[in-house]
Image (tube, rainbow, N blue to C red; front, top):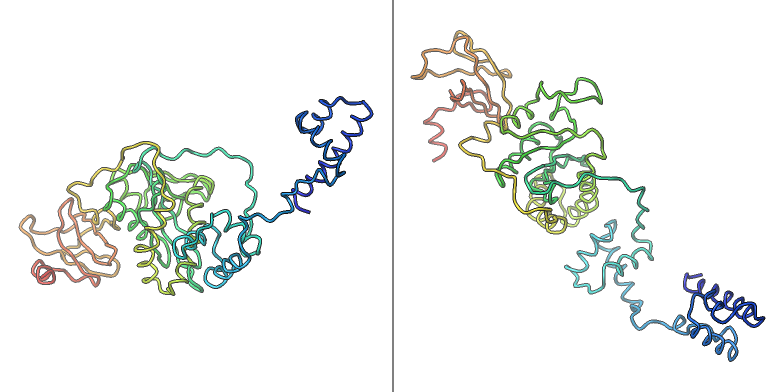
Length: 394
């Protein structure tokens, strides 16, 4: 029985009770009306209808009429057919965006969702749990950046990691890409893409992954003195690192990934994409602009905490740096490579000197002595001379 009919039967039973009590002079007309929750005038109308037609006179005849706004059966069937044919497995909101924009649908989101739920095509949302106090978002952009990764089967049989870097103030995603496995290099890439687009931000919020932090005791506090390569790079840039100690603390990232998992696999399948390079192109060129347009919000305050990066090579900071001692033959041993330091006009030799080897994302290397670069090397450890570099550039 529908709720409206159920309420109608309850109202009829209450009227009979109120009418009998009024007839027996137990209740006044005003008190009988109060029992029904209506005015004196409405009660008198009920009495007139009841005396004329009995309980049938109390029925609101509009309840048995079909609304002229009710959608035709064939429209509901066409909607269900469209969903099953092209969008099966999509959540209601995601499907509605394509129904509205791609199929010129003119029904409301609530109407579409209700019809799909009635047909059993989409599930009903779970009731929300107890209220929890949350941390307010940062007031301006660039004040706090989140980075996190989600391992998921984004295409059938291929569980890639999706690495996302987003702003806490407005939920805008500055960088997102797939990798086989997250780590130091993927974290460097997300930060690099953000800084190159917007500038240096104030703080960085992440979980306690081993590429972000050293954690002496499992589940314990992070070591803020003994830094990872990533921690050293952000310290050089003057960016504060903040560690999250529970999944709830990373609630915004967790909710964002739930939204990604509810949309991106379906979009990739619809586009027929199965390879990681194609998926990254689709993600950056098509999916992410639409995603930001839908979910980006206005920051609480105007302004920005981003500052430009000045007079620095960002790639020389967001890289792996290792200290080495120079051998008597002016060579440096690194990862199985023997890197020869060329002669220069600043120093006759570097025997026993402490130098710094930089390893870049593409596998190339460089040796620094203090702030000065001594030489560049390719992935095999062969020195890249100035003339060779110039020729390759040409």
